[in-house]
Image 1 (spheres, rainbow, N blue to C red):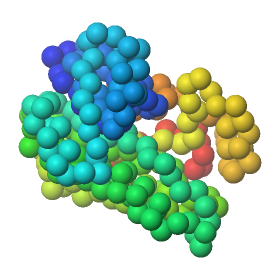
Image 2 (tube, rainbow, N blue to C red; image 1 turned 135 degrees about the vertical axis):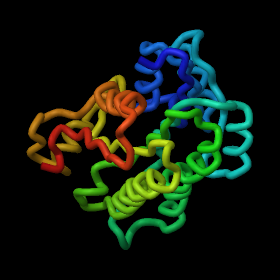
Image 3 (spheres, one colour; image 1 turned 180 degrees about the vertical axis):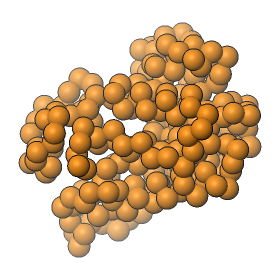
Image 4 (cartoon, one colour; image 1 turned 90 degrees about the vertical axis):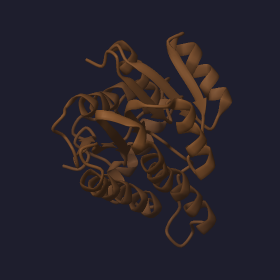
Length: 233
């Protein structure tokens, strides 16, 4: 499905981004993964095999992003799966500097990636941003996360209009477990959001399928695909 196409995944060294890289490779794509962490990139390269290309980038820094795209060159699809350290305190307890740093990485990072990468996208290509279900269902301690996720979805819709015919979409994951699973995470999520219809956390590979769909569907733009096990029902 993705043969002869180049996929760039920022945040591709772990989690959902790593799963997107796995599936894109299996679909025949040339894949570039990027991260701030050289250690994570090295580990991901070993796990994904020899067909992967790794590049360092700090999405919170304009020059780093510009240099990154100069090295990458023309490509077909960009996935931004950045996951910074997310503030989880109550509104009055959150450290404003930590909130701003998270916004700088996730929202403004995705903004920069779209701004500096769009000019290199080949005809028929796309950008897929990442939000999260706190954009549409609020939980105690998630005020900062809700705000940056909602802003990311609004950005995807605005860019779908401004950057057309480049397609711009977003994936909105629910609660996703790590690989291997984090002990106690399922219980913590159940306490925060009881009554999930599917009664389990998502795997990264289940969420990654939404990115592959958006790469391939040439009439999807301005869409936000929710993959949440029914959490916002």
